[in-house]
Length: 402
Image (tube, rainbow, N blue to C red; front, side):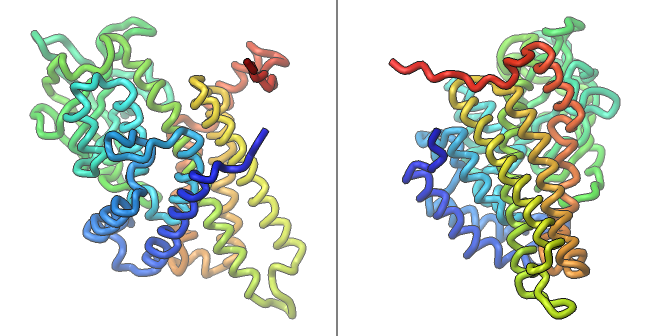
């Protein structure tokens, strides 16, 4: 096993790190950098995105032919972690949720003739997108509980129902919608594309949340007769569950990639502070209790990195990597929370203040154990694998040479 990065990927990582250190991290301390929802202010975001494009650091998961970087999933793990050492990083590089997951899905399943209309504007950063699956009284971690309905209306589908906690919806122009088209247990859902300008739907509210928000917030939507042409259906009728599985698997892992960057940043800030802060005659970093906190958090981050890399490698080999992604999701979500909590504790009142981004990350980190499947759901998935596979759950897999 070779854990060293290829020279080209290491060079890219270093370029991202320089951009983050020189262009993004200094902005975090300036209140003028933020909008009313604790995001990067739109005018500043637009300028930084142009800089990222000029430096070849844009939409790195997308094919080069479409203006991206053509990275593998392993390459994405390296790049996304480095990007999110700043709280502003992913959105600047067009690697933030939900656009990132939507681009990966549409690149994979859209017919080529549809990509210029529905995918390219997201890659170019001209529009935002949203994935409308979660419902107030229905699906969250379990898509089978979808109650929003799509009923045939000639060559179109009429949509009725509600969705909520739809990330980015307030700013989105392109939506991917999951709706029920039959009562079949496995083939009852269908996925559609629709444009925000289409009549027959509206945003009820932008839901207030505990943590900082992505651009466009987390919104509740109502559908009262939206007509979607059948030509905007994704895959076949009844393939909605397949669409969600394709999208959410990799998207869960890209969350983990980014969270590792935030976790590392927390430890960077904390380590710098305790190396300089003196109390009762010695620097804090010389105290065994402080060393234990830092070491535990660092170890959990490194375990998460290895799990993310294992899952990314499995995806690159053509696997769905459900087991590997579930393990990474649980461990990295916990590692992020541990790192943020450790940093806040070691910084003391400074950590509780807005003088550093640690309190921003701390509030953001709590959602990690909920989004894209609660940790309990992923543990249930893993228990299912263990029951079916027994001792083979731990198999290494063998390389087939020749």
